[in-house]
Structures are given as C-alpha cells and as structure tokens.
Length: 406
Image (cartoon, rainbow, N blue to C red):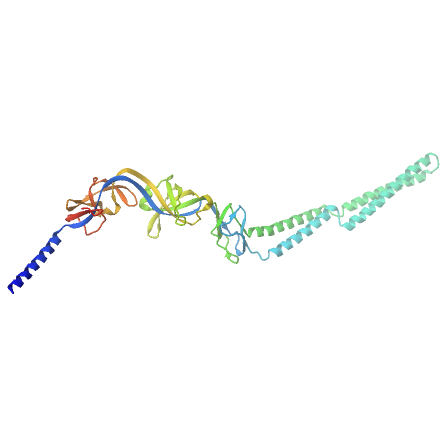
C-alpha cells in the first residue's frame, strides 16, 4: 500500500514540475526582420466618372412631356430636340394666326394696287375708252387743220375739235386722280400695320412651339435621360444631360490624411471592374479646397482628366484608382501592422534576445503593406509582427521569424 502511495506522489510531483516548466518557458512570438529595399508610396481609393464637358437639358416652360425624341446613349448635335412639352391649343392658335395673316396680306395688296379688282377694272375700261377717243380727236383735228389751210373746212370746226381734245385730256387726268384716290395713304399705312401685327402674332405662336422644345445646348452623348411621355416638368427641370464621353472627368475620393501627398500634374492609374485586366491613365488637374464627409470617411474630391477612346467607360462608373506619390529605393521598412501606439508615440516591439523592448520610431512613406522607418530601427532588427495586445514590453519570448525559424 505504501508503495502505491509513493508512486502516486511521484506522479503528482512530475505533473506539477512539467506545468511549472511550461509556465516559465518563453512564449513564442512571430517576428519580422527590418530589411532594406525599394518602397513605393501608393494611395488606393475610388473615383466616379463623368464627361469633362457636359450641360443639362432643361425645360424652358412648365408642362407635360408629349414625346421624347432620343434615348440614352444617342449622339446628338447642338440644338437637337430631346423632348417636347404638350401645348394642346397650339394647332388652334396657329391656324387662327395664319388666317389673320392671310387676310392682312390681301388687304395690304389691295391697298397697294389701288382698290378692289372691280373698281380697278371700271377705271381701266374708262381710261381705255378716253384714250381711244383722244387719239381719234387728235387725228380728226390734224385732218381738219389741213383742210382749213385749203379753205375746205371752217375755223369753227377746227376750234370744236380742239375743245374736244382738251375735254378728253381733262377727263383722262380726272380718271387717274380718282383711281389714286380709291385708297388713301392712311389706308395703305393701316393695311401695312395690320400685316405687321398679324406676322408678329404668328411668330409669337411659333415661338411658343419652339419654347416647348427641349434642345441640346452642346453636341455630345445623351445620358441620365429622366423623362418619359406623360411626365410633368417644372420650368428649369433638368430632363437629361449631354456631354463628350471621349474625355472624362474623374472625382477621386482621397482620405484626408493622404491629401497632402497629392498635387496637380500627378499621374493616376485607373481600372474598372467591368473590364478586368485593362488600365487607363489620368492626370490630376485640381486638388480640393475643402474636406467633406462621405459615409464614415472624411475625403477631398480630387479632380482628374482621362482620355476615354471609344467611350468605353460610361458616365457614373465607379473606378479603382492608384496614385503613386513617392518612391524610395533603399528604404528600411517593416510591415504596417507592426506599428503600435504608446502614450501618443508611434513605435514597435523588438525582440532583443528573449526580451521584448519598446522602440520609438519615426516613419516615412508607406505602401499598401509596408512602411519606411527613418529612425529607431536598424537593418535586421526582429520586430514583433502584428499588434497583438498579449505581447507587451518586458515579456520573455521565443522569437519565431516568418517561415517558422527561431
């Protein structure tokens, strides 16, 4: 029995010794070595695309859309109709204006021609009759004058023919005067004024029709077409946009901390998930003057221009953007996730032998995964990978270099 108790006691002692040994053994910690090499500072973000030059097509008057003459994606020339607002009374008004213009035109023609056709016909006949009689009287007067010279006709006969010629001439002049008096100068002026007013009224009705037409202010591609027949629009409502899709303007949303690294003239690599494997190049043309909130982000809208041959990227597309801001060829760098904060200081934990030590560091540029260390580390230092809070300064550890090596 005693023998069994001794064996059990020895087993308990062995277990306790093993547990104490495990507890006091250094804890394995993953580390990475600070190393030198090129590091490229990139800003990765997103952008939206719109035509570099565009204009809105707006409704000049309020009303209901009667018809739409284009569809999204159509190429339009300047002044081309996009949609038309219904004017139900238009046909009635234009018919009335055209009828009034015809009447005014006829009245002016009558005034300018000297009276009605019947009156002019009567005077034409009278004047023709008087001219014939005048020609005959003059011929008779000449013949009688020759006879009187041979004493074959009397002086009284010759005087009578002269009086007849004078009478006919007077009647002819009187007929011409009465013809001219058919239409007074005031009547002609009134007829001309009526014609001008009728023409202006017709132009006004036609302008109403033109004002109901929504036209493109510039040539380009129609997009964001927002109306259909039957839709009601108010004056100034934007019903579509038109722009040149061969050159796009990008709104690049850059997070506030990165804005200081962006400058006009910077080249930007652009890609679109809908066309994988292809890339475009844009150029920054304007940095923002203010920062705005988009969701949980504080961003500035950086503007860039980009050629878009064939209009392959549509307006409104959400694009991926890489902005290369700086490159250092022989930078001492560590993974970004190794950085820690302590009392507002940036630093890292370094494995010095089996003990973790805190090092303040001064950092430079960063890439997607790495950061340049300007001060605080030297090449080959073993930095704790990641920022796991279980590893603290002063802890006894067993460094485990990436790849499983101690």
